[in-house]
Length: 351
Image (cartoon, rainbow, N blue to C red):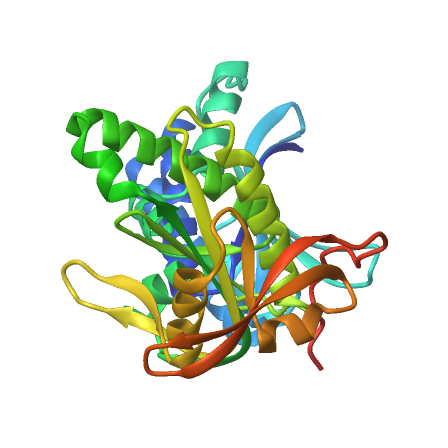
């Protein structure tokens, strides 16, 4: 089989996406309009029925050649129930059940391509692979604005449940002296420097499994352990912060930054309707911001609570008690470096 792509079917939105992509492929293969429509409908019905039974499965899409003729092949993985086979047989020219190495059944649906002498060109294969692997424009935009899992939930449910998350590390990184800098330069120069700053930090955050939440003027806010549980989210943020400090020294702006990290529970959700944003609230967020504001310039600064979770993994020095508005006295620790043998990044498997 000429493999054109694999789709993960786990939400109503993914079924719609699969239907649209199968329809577009059927059109590109030259099927009559009624067959194009029927192909999309049957694929959608099979996906929906199997999703209810399985919760999640994969749909493989490709071209297969049998008896010297090519056909459209759809493989519904983990799908061998009699009712699904009966539904597939109402449309496909050939239907068979194959068994994977792990013992699960796969339903193979095959429809002959009626165009005489059809042979797939490299151009067609490349184009259709690209189409099948590509997110819709709406999904692409959502994933620019929102974390992937939140975008998927919003697409499927048209809303996002507000949740409380525990053991979340919150990082704030602020540009020192930004106001004075921006007052002396042209607007486009300021924005270009901010863009360079933001792109560098986004790349570093992704490397360390740290999720960017938003930028607030010249301040960068991110979290670790929010959507994907981590054993030591503070350690991920510290690694990220140290790389940020190293990276900013190489930027043309000549800026310096100050980083603050705290850990604890947060509330996360979407606010707004026409121009929504995914945001965090709670004392953990406020404290992380205060740690950044009162910490040392050019350093990664930790609250006492954050420091306790990683004290075996890094060297840090207390800069003393700082009077913080609304919080009283807080002890702040300035990180020197990671200790040799600090544990690598790892996800936690929750049971």
